[in-house]
Amino acid sequence: MHSEKTSPLHPNALEAMSIEPEDFDEASNALMELERRDKQRAAAVSLRILEGDTGDVFYRAFAFEVLYCAALDDAVSYIEAHAATAEVYVLGAMIDAMTEDSNASADQKTIQRAATLLKKALKVRSPPEIVSISEKISRFEEAYP
Image (cartoon, rainbow, N blue to C red):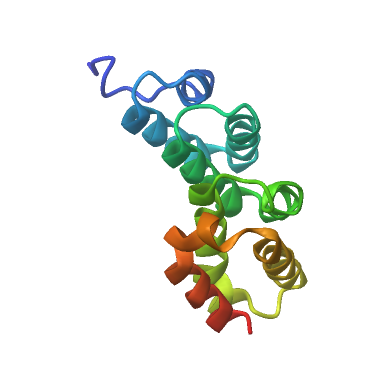
């Protein structure tokens, strides 16, 4: 007989743990498990986390990564709407996701659109604001000249 700790959690429980985190490690694991089981639901939860300003900046950056992996089109829409004003750490997560995807998906129209959107967003950010992610930006600019 399995204990409650080892039995799989219902997707509703995973969603609740992700949206109302008491422990960010636990919430991150719940969101990853939800993505493994149901990408569409994980994408919706990730958007709720991002748009609801849930958790800390690191958790929101992680939510963006999940969104990017689970629903690329939704992630690109999020980039379009928020890259110019997103917290720098979340912007860094956007840049990382795009840079990691550059070799595998360079021909995809969606990826190129996202790269263009990020380039535009970076132009409106002030240099002091983005100094902490300058290395990420350099790698991104190399991947998308």
